[in-house]
Image 1: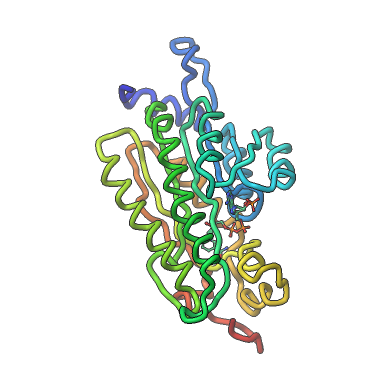
Image 2: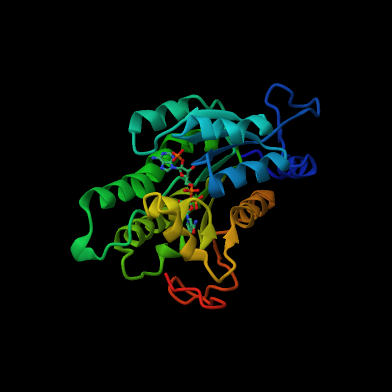
Length: 278
Ligand code: NAP
């Protein structure tokens, strides 16, 4: 598909992120830009859905827990589609259900456990790699043609500071996010010259269901991760995505690293009071 050029980009910005509707070209009627968000049933994905809805985007949301996903989608007038990124057929069905797409936020992901390597469980490593690495790879691959056809596509990959830092007990998760980082850098190279942008968003500590999932539902343990410090909220991270989406299409924010002020590295955090270290 041909790159439509500056006048369309300018018009789109003037129309609060909306693309010029294909059927209505020349009549100055606009169709909203469409964003798909994976892992939108909670946390960063759900907050990003709210942020992009506020910016005028039409949304397609995916996750496994359809009940939770519908709770996010309904108030926003978004479509909620069952999606398991570890299942190729599910990803292909999700992609097939999206007729046109401008922005993909590949966010679905997880950490499981904090076992040291000698004691790590095979099935947790496998699930992390199938979700965080293969899940994103196949989602991006399935949706790239539609993103390119939009004439102004954007892929936001939600990585982590675990994509370039390591910590004891985090081998499976950090290795998966390092791999995701390699994928994202490669994608950027391969898309050079096409009307497609790629952003890797790498958050530090964000208080979501992330730690609850990591500790298999142990709420007490999950709470301790954030004890005595002020973590980022999912809305803080969503605001980064909204900002990236708001920029003119010649501007590619290659990477964003965003952490709480109380966190300098994956292991160096400032806790107040007598809060235990995690
Ligand atoms: P969260 O609240 O647990 O959200 C994770 C989302 O991923 C959920 O919507 C979950 O939905 C979805 N998901 C998990 N497995 C999936 C699968 N197989 N197929 C489709 N969706 C799946 O945690 P979060 O903090 O928002 O995490 C979002 C992303 O941010 C992840 O990639 C995570 O690695 C990254 N991140 C988080 C932090 C943090 O501190 N919270 C820091 C850095 C990076 P279902 O369970 O309904 O499928």
